[in-house]
Length: 268
Image (cartoon, rainbow, N blue to C red; front, side, top):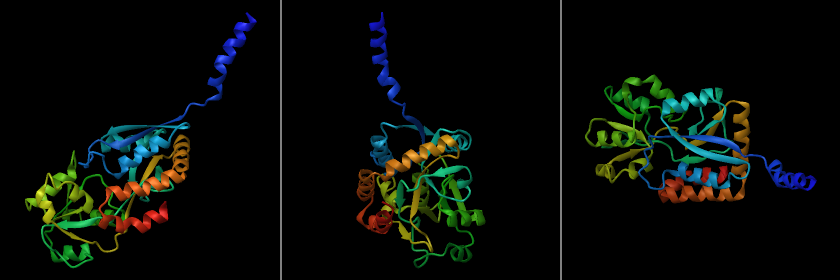
């Protein structure tokens, strides 16, 4: 009998020595605008993080709508989300990764025709065109400066939600139902098959617009801090830093990559 107890103890010993990995439910937008079979650069970064997560972290993606995502991020302790822009308001209830997961060239003003010389001052453009209407994706942050402008001049913005919202806005621009869009040039190029006219759109640089950085965020809680600390450690690994730069290089055109290369090298 004693030998049996010893055998059972030896079988159970490895179980006590191995701690279960921390579980991260990573919320993704279920209305992605990406038509790329690989997904956008954030989805490719997610695959890299999942590869590096074991043995102390397990990342489970979960696709939800925007409203449900923000509700869970405000209320629950083990939910995180990908590619969120850092704003002062969001920092009141979210913890942000030390490094961004993605870096995009500055948002541009996209239109059917040349509207002004670069860089465009939107405030001045609105004064010159009182009835101008610009399409934006509902619920998306465009960075603090543009978010403030959108709030200040709501009459100049048309917001679209739902699946492939950016593609719908591009179609509306092609039909001249909008004067312009605030969008990434890469997004417009990514939908050329669905909106062939987009190859003829004119892009304008916006005044005082930095590159756009998306962060991995978790709820502002003890468990959220634990998950963020684990993610920060994974993102510090040399393999991650090298691959993150390479994934951006593969996703963007050479012209777009030049706009973010210096920032990427500084970050990673």
